[in-house]
Length: 459
Image 1 (cartoon, rainbow, N blue to C red):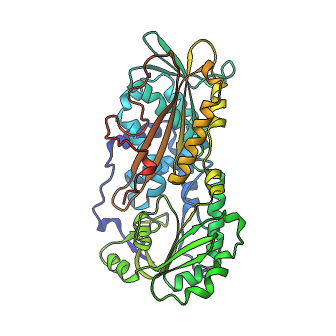
Image 2: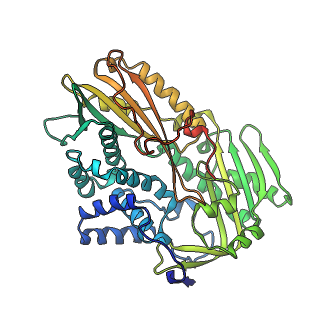
Image 3: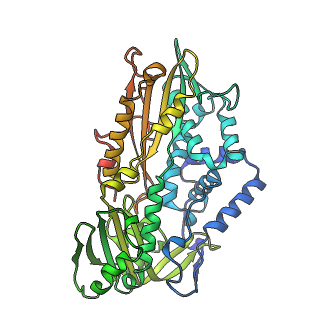
C-alpha cells in the first residue's frame, strides 16, 4: 500500500496542556519498561492489517475490536498518548470517552494533588486493578468535585477494617461518607444485540456492497427472536429492483428505508482529503448523518494508504469503489426495557459501605449510549427504586446521579455532555453540599434545561 510520510504534514503535538498534565503525571507512576511492554501488547491487539484473504470470508462479528478491557487504564493511557503525540493513530470514538476525563483532571491539577490518598489510588489502578479504570477514575473525579466545592477530601484505604466508603469529606461542622459506583459502559443486552446485528448483516453484505446500498432499519421485535438469515431472506430478492430510494416493510417486524451511498460525492471529498479508517468522518460520508447514537455498520472496497510509520490504526482511505452503510435501531418495548438498567445493584452495594454517625452521600455514574427512549425508561426505573427504598432514609443524605455522553464528530476531536440529577434529599439536612456538581463538564459551562440525550446529536 501507499505510505505517506508524516513530514508531508505540519501536525502539531501536545496541543492540550491540561490533558498533557494528567498524562505526564500518570506516566511518572509507571516504569518505562512496563509501559513499553503494555503499549506493544495493545498495538499488537488493535492492528488492522490490509487483508489479502477472500473478501467476505469472515463474519462481521469476528472483526478487530478497537478496545482493550483487561488493561483498561493502559488502553486509556495509550489513547491519551496518541492524542497528544501520534494523532495519525488516535482512535477518536474511544478517545472521546477518555480525553475529557484527562482534561478535567488537568484543569484543576494543583487542587487534585492536595487530595489525601489520590496518588496511592492511581498507583493501585496502574498496577493492581488495571481493568477498573472507569470505576477508579470516577472516584477521582468525584473527589475533585468535592474539593472544588471547598471540602476537605480524603480517600480511605481499601481493605482496612472491613467495609468502608470511598471518601471522607468535611467542611466546618459538616462531615459525610461518600461512596462512588460506576455502571458498566453498556448493558450486556446491547453487546449481544450488536453481535446479532453483525451476524445478520454478514449474510447480506455482499449484495449491499455491490449495490452501494444505504439502509435505515427499524426493528419492532427483539433481534434475538429472528433468524440469522432474516435480513437476507427478506431483502435479497427485493434489493435488485431498487433504482431509486424507497421502502420495504415486514408488518410488525421491521421497516426499512432504502437509499444509496453517493460514491461520486465521497470520491470528490477524497480528492482533497485523506479520511481515517474507521472514523466519524468516514461514517458521515457513507451514512450522510451523525452515527454516534445509532447502531451503524459499513463496509467498502477502497484503496487505502498508511499515514506515517507502522501499521497500527493509521489506515486512511483515498479512493472508493463500492460502499454500503446500515443504520439499525430496535423500538421493541422488551429491548428498551432490557437496556434501561436500574441502579439497584449499585445503590444497595453503596449503602453497605456506610458506618457510624456521619451521613452518607452516593454518586452513581452511567453512560447514555442507547438513546432517548432507553434513558426515559431508565430514569423511571431509577426514580421508582429510590422512592421505594426505605433504608435510604436511615443512612443516606444525598444521592447524585451522573449521566455521561461522549461524542466524536468530523469537526471536533471530542465533545462531552453530562446531566446530573439529585434524586434524594434528606429532609433535615439543609442545603445541598455541592453547588457545582458536574464531574467532567467544566464549572460555569452553559447548561440547557434539558437532559442531554433529548438534544439532537452534534454534527
